Amino acid sequence: MTKKVNYSEENIATMVEVYDVEASDADRKAQVDSLAETLGKTAASIRAKLSSLGVYKAMAKAEPKGTRITKSAKIADIADIAGMRNDAFFDSLQGANSDVLDYILEMQTALFDFENPVEEVESDS
Image 1: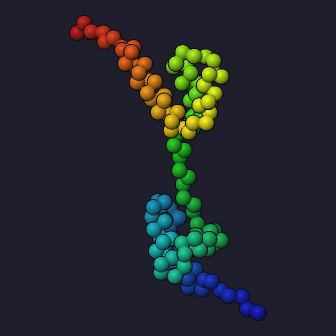
Image 2 (image 1 turned 60 degrees about the vertical axis):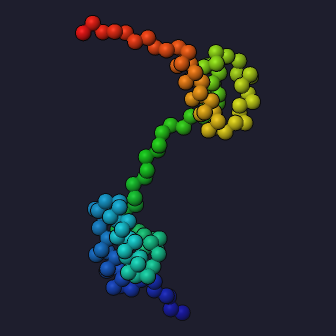
Image 3 (image 1 turned 180 degrees about the horizontal axis):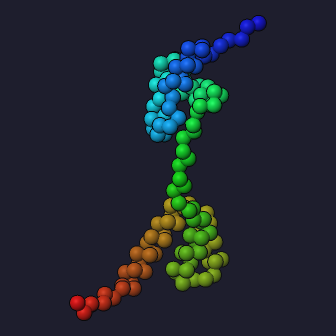
């Protein structure tokens, strides 16, 4: 039984020649997409073959968008702004989704800022 060859030696030579590991992430993605179209393969197949040849460089990982604030921390902030330290009073908020908690915090903060305006100090200039 003969093994089916997915990539000919010519295909492999073309892939290695076209793929520039030093290019930017966007350029490398474009190169993989172009090779996929030219060779009639999927981009995933091209990446896998380049990887098995030892020439593929993975895309950079996206940086985390920020620190996630837990529901418990949001509820604690709501209790603090309300001036209530009894967490049991706010237990029912555990069932609220994060967007609702964000809205409550936003409204509380706006109300607090409205009721406690910062006095502007005139400078002597």
